[in-house]
Image (cartoon, rainbow, N blue to C red; front, side, top):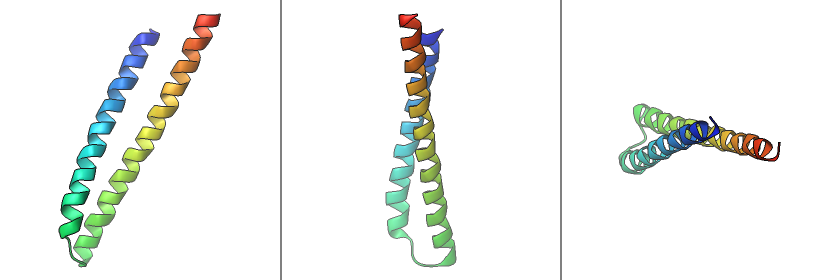
Length: 78
């Protein structure tokens, strides 16, 4: 059971990492070519918001992995 949860957490972490890399590439490719119009500013803000969401996902995964490790240690020493 513990191993299945850990593998699931690793899978989610990989998906988030790929998502971050895609957003980072989009950010560097699109934002550098944008001007200062209202639509371009909205695009920049949207990409920034997406990056913030991905960072929050990384934090949640990190907390999940710490909790899983704690439960694993508890089960080992019980």
